[in-house]
Image 1 (cartoon, chains in turn blue, orange, cyan):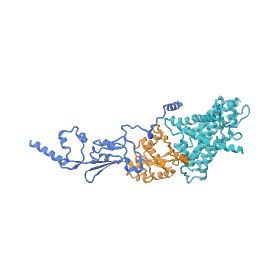
Image 2 (cartoon, chains in turn green, brown, purple):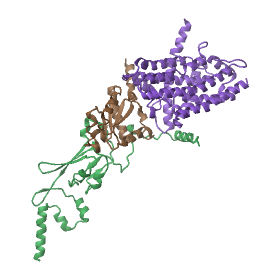
Image 3 (tube, chains in turn orange, cyan, yellow):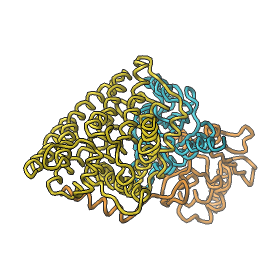
Image 4 (spheres, one colour):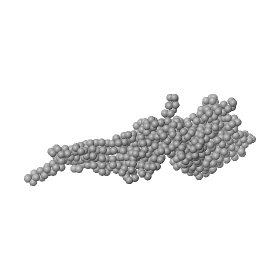
Length: 174
Length: 145
Length: 319
C-alpha cells in the first residue's frame, strides 16, 4: 500500500518526461479552444448585439460621421473568451478563433485590438445608406429565400414599402 | 574580464517567480499553479522557481483587478522585491479591469501604479500563453541584470 | 608552518571549501533534475544551482527596518563558516583519510547543528512572524534528529573501538573499516544505518521534515526576509551541508575504496555521495508529503532512535 508510490515513481522514470516542448517548440491547440475574437466585416449586419452581451465590454461599434458605415472594435485586453458574442451573432460574423497567443509588451497594450470597417449597403434604387444585409442573414430568417424576397431584400425600407404597395395595388387591380 | 562577464550573464537562466494576488478570482492563480506543477508545462525548465517570499523574486506575476482595498498592499509587496525585477500582468483584470472595469472598488489599472513590462491577457490565459509571457519577460530581464 | 599550510589547503580547496562547494551544488542540481524526472518533468539544467548563486549575488540586498541588522548579516556568514570547517573534517576514503588529531565525530556532532543555529539566528533576527515560527520549529526538529545521530555515532565509535574501548576519530573509523569490512554490510549495524538514513532528510530540511522552511505555509520561514548575496550564502551553506552529511554517511558506513588511485577513488566517493543522496533525499522528498511538527517529533523518537538503540545494544552484546 505505502510502497505503491515507488511503483508510480518507477513508472514515471520509465515513461520519461511528458513535457510539451512549448516555448522552444510546437505545442498542440484544440480546434474548439476559445481564443482571440475575429470579425468578418462582410457578414456583419451591425446590429450591435455583440456589444450589448459582451461581458468584458470589449466590443464597441462607432458610427462614421459621413454615414458610410461603422467601425467595429474588439479590444483583446478585456475580452474574457466567454463566447457570448459568437452565440448571439445572427450571421456568425463574429467568432472565437483558437489563437491563444496573447502575451505582449506593455507598450503594445492599446494596439492589441481588432479593427474592422463594416460598410453600409446602398439601396440600388435611391442610393440611401442602410445596414448591410448579407445573404446569410436572409437564410437565417426565412430559410430558403423565394424569388420575391431576392427581388426586394437589397432595397432600403422606404423603397421596399413602395414596392410592396405597388405589388399590392397590382393585385387589387386584377 | 570577459570570463567574469560570461559568468555574470548566466544569471539570466535563474529567474525566480513570485505571484501577487491583487483581488483575483483565483482563476489565473490556478493557471499559474498549472505551469509550475503539471508536467506538461513545467516552468522549471526555464530555470524558474515559484518562491514564497517577495525578497527572493525576480519576475513578479500579478493577477486580479487591483481593488482599492488591496492597492496599498500590492505596492508594499512590490517595493519589497529587490531590483532588478520584471513585472508581468496575468489575466485581463490587471491589464484593463476586465469584467470589473467601472466597478466602485476598481478605480485604477495596474500600470497606473506599477511599471508593467509584459501583459498576458486572457480570462484566464492558457498555460502556454503564460509560458510565452514568462519567456518574453526573460528577454526583458536579460537587459536589466 | 607546514601544518598550517596543509590545514588551510584542506579548509579552502580540498575536501572543504572549493571542492565541497562545487560538489554540493552539483549534487543539488542532480537532486532537482532527478526529482523532476520522477515527476515526469524535464526539470532545470544540472547547473541550475550555480546559476541561482550567480543571480543572487547580483541582486539587491534588502534588510528590514525592524531587523537586528548585525545579527541579520552575521547569521548566514556564521552558518557558512561552520560548514566550511565541518567539510574540512570529512575524509575522502582512498584520497585523504581525514585530519588526524583534528577531526573526530564529536567535533562533527558539534559542527553539524550550526546551520540549524544559523537558521534560528536568522529567523529571530529578521523580526518576521514567519521567521519566529520557523525558529521554534527548527528547534523542535533539531532536538528530534540529534538523538538518533548521537546514538548512531556512539554505536560506530564503539564498533570501531574493537574489543575494548571506543574510537571517535573519523580517520581511525575509516581505517578500521578498511581492515574489517564496511559497517554498511554488517548486520548489527544495519539498524544504525537505517536510522542515519532517517536522520538525513531531517537535517537537510527536505520535504517530509521541512518544518522550518515549509514553503507553502511558512514561506521559507527564517529565509523569508533574506535576499541577494546573503541568501546566496545560505544556499552555499546548505550545499556544503549536503556534502558534509553525505560524506559523513560514506565515512561511517561505506568507506570502501576501489583500486585505481586517487582519481578513481574520488569519483567513487562522489558516486557514493550521489547514491546516498538519491536514496535519502531525492526519492524521499518526491514520494512523501510534509508531516506536522508533533508527528515529526514522534517519528524521530519512535523509529530512528529505537533503531539506533537496537544497533547500540547489538554492538555492546557482541563486542
